[in-house]
Length: 376
Ligand SMILES: [Zn+2]
Image (tube, rainbow, N blue to C red; front, top):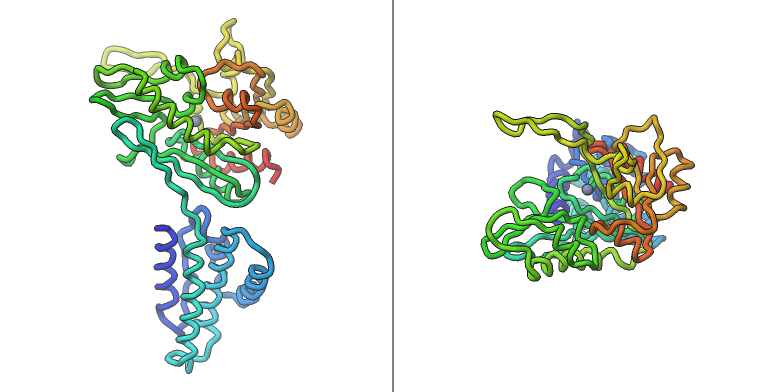
């Protein structure tokens, strides 16, 4: 709603300023993910073609039952075009006349429903010990699929996901748990002067021992007791409740794609930092099996693609489709190691699951991956 109000204020300034005078430069609106149509940011707001498109889109809007976001876009175009008429095509004698009053009234009438149509996520508060975190939920009519983003610091995948969700509809959920300006992979919370930490993609399991082992104490003298496990389990259930019922889960993740290297730990000591998670994490190396390798059934690597961009799928059909499109892909086996990750949990419930992995910052590439996956 805040974004919509900001846009409303910006637009109000736009329509109220210099009435009847020509504006030298096209208005530059700050592009946002899902509320401003591209045609308004391209600078061709003031052409006669826009007037024509105004009438076309208005007719289409009322003829068909548009989804809310489409209505939002179309109403925005309508408002913009009306203001264009006001600035360019009304004679100056209308400036202080009843016509001007009627025009502005019409604009205001159009703006009110627009504000209510614009998307803002639903915020679901979740209490964890002494703290509160939030699950944000973007929801609109469309495909029966849910985009899941649980690692707060993997911002590129969220952006790619929102971009795709805006086209396809369905649901997108994301976690917000850092409130000091930082973004973190791990969720931390306090209880009785002890700070606990867990990975929000290692909490989906019915095995409480696995869940308990996935929670660590980072500060204080408390233990991971039943209360702490219950708190984390509560979050897992709330997230799963939002996912359950959809036939297709698309997980959004980013990796760092860093090679193994010696890094300085302190003045006197250097330690070896393992290479970050990538497609080769699924390959058995030096006769040693990793949990990723043990959970893998099949793999296809396109040698021309970087090791950071790949899919993880749970169904053979998805593997075959992506293989035919020559995209690097891993097929999780039918009996994967239960490490609390959502891909394993989804398999238990026979829900189609695909994880899109891309290097942090590669938003365009991840959007392209989602396009390939959904055949957009
Ligand atoms: Zn992740």
